[in-house]
Length: 289
Image (cartoon, rainbow, N blue to C red; front, side, top):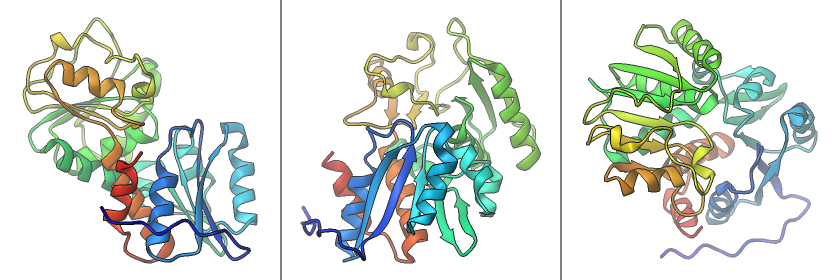
């Protein structure tokens, strides 16, 4: 295993980077990014900050005032962060959510690296090929938006967005149709008594924090799902998520969001520093958590 240099002692010149979310105690981003900074000899530090939604405006202003070199934003801030940014990258505008903020002379510029991270993780972790397939996406927030845009871009045949709040799901579908176009996406209320009609090779994505709950299960009995369906939980934590464990116990191919975290994090790192991310170092840092 590659040895990562020891953490340097912060100085007055150390540049601050960070993650804003609520909660963030499970985040592996600090380990990943701090290992990358050390590997490249950059005098920088990455910290996670638990910021409730009503304090996000203050947090962004404060980070800007402190001269932070860049930020990630995660649940539940991705959509609000996009609205608060002074500039918006085309990709983030298409998704309607931001996960990466880069400082500019006028404030923050919003980017979305989740789409890239999601698609690369799907390919590497479960070998999913979207063309001609169907997908069900659980959730209606920023992570769901990224998954949907990525799948549509990859040629998915159809997507159903499921959420307990059907109004939120309908609003998401309407937004995606307006920005991305097409009629390959519909919405429905999440019904635990009605499993989605999927076949072998189709995909179920959880774009919710549900898998971080230790005893969480998929919303329907997995015995009612066709063999060969692929499961992907965008959440991650120490070990596997409860949703991934439940799917694997029933014999399904399933993966959680660690590799997505790696790829979206590497893309964010390059946006902040202008340097290629040390992927092997970052992957080893995640593997050690």
